[in-house]
Image 1 (cartoon, rainbow, N blue to C red):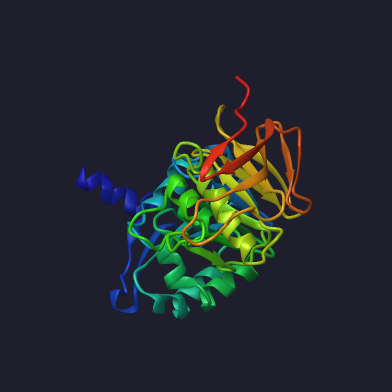
Image 2 (cartoon, helix red, strand yellow):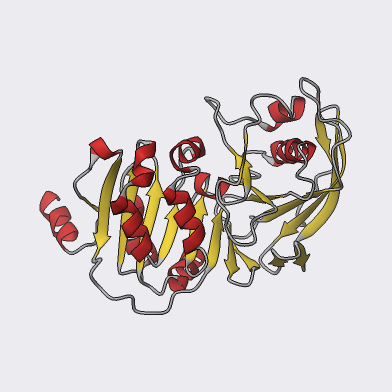
Length: 330
């Protein structure tokens, strides 16, 4: 087994650990051959994945937008296993270089910035988004990701998705806040919203959340929106993504869902500000439009319009209790 693994590493099929640079705040892994030319043309796009198992076709779309070339994976936990997943489960990539951050100073490291400059696509892994915010916000790395998004794909899953909107949940507590907790006190200290961590194209009005329905996150997303709208961000909407579901967005802002049956994207559009969003008090919020993005739907991030929605309805929160969430048709 050890001999076989060594052979796979030699062939570039497993993510081989490189010098860790631990003193510089990161570890470094490589899968594939970075010296190979990029076979195709790269193009801008966004991969918004809700976490859990990857939708293979969505990730192949991402690889194709990267010209089947060189991917850089950014994360702040675990090791280089996503490089192996890209190489063996998705396929069609020349190399995958992974940087695992442990300190903020790594976001200033010229070796990481140079690797991003030459990448054909950038993917932000899951984990703990509070580490991403602490390590990357307002650094050369975050500014470079913004610039790279102009002409190459940027993807994220789970925590990576959570920081792809211009607004997101910082998750600075020990555990992620639940929907009942957020609805009970939408302006409380546990509702740690983050503004303008990244500035990705057409995501200015979007507040993202992942693992959506399986973790019952509709209530907390509505609470997040009540919080940011109370602060003056009157046009922000929510985009929740179910596990295993991915929204792929082309360079013009036109999106479609790639997902197993029974999983969706959830567009959450409140009508104005909450009737009551006060520190220490339960949320009151009427007129929250919810639209399901399904496999047949088309979502325009420019206009926030969904064509051929999977379902739609209007929910409300009264005294911290959420009712009226539309259900997908059987």
